[in-house]
Amino acid sequence: MAYALEDEFGDIIGKARRGQNMSHSEIADAAGITESDLSRMEQYTLKPTESQVYKIAEVLNLDGAKLLDIANETWEPTPIKEYENTDLKVITVSAPVGGWPVNAYILVCQSTKEAAIIDTAAHPDLILKQLGTHKVNATAILLTHSHRDHTDGLIQLQNATGCETYIHKNEPKPKSAGKLYELVHADGVEIGELKVTVLDTPGHTPGGCSFFTQSAAFVGDAIFAGSVGGPNISYQDEIDSVRDNLLSLPNDVRLFPGHGPSTTVGEEKLHNPFF
Image (tube, rainbow, N blue to C red):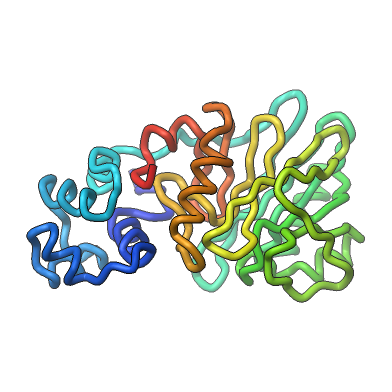
């Protein structure tokens, strides 16, 4: 089968290395491998041995057994075609942005058919089409962070739906057709009968946040299946906030990331080498 993860072995060790401000030479010396081989592993031109995986994991403070499963492509989260229960439905809209697949989501309150658009990516037409297909009424736009691959299309969606738009107080603000309503940790937004709670997950961006309701959390680029987002601002803040605010949720909560397949809190505890 095709390996479905957003990040594989090379991406993971590269993010951990950059996040901890370690050079190729530092890691290579500590792990007993050549700097050239380490670079080739990050670039997917050299497959590591089991011993090398464990040595690199130790140097980078990663879980060696979990990292080995990803290096050997023996784990990926259990796929789901649709996610819904009596209270909510999640519609995934995925399309390439700049050559890379990006996920946007529509969270639907089953009782009222009111919906939130979560991240807009660069495919507003696809989102609008899904709103019509499922006959739901979008009442809010929720932004996990302001990177363009997650906010391009915002103005078009605002103009088409009239939705109010919410973003974390600490996040740089994207171009908008109207006021951006600022949120902080533990704030709530009501979507029909659903209460969506804001969870701080900074590190990838200054004010990155996640949106949690019942059995679903929309996590942007804070965490991916088996990995985390690029720690552009603070590696430690990213690790700490994901551990404290996302992996503390019940094991069956499904995590919907900005890239790659959805996963669960339980699967990430068992398989994500960063934790």
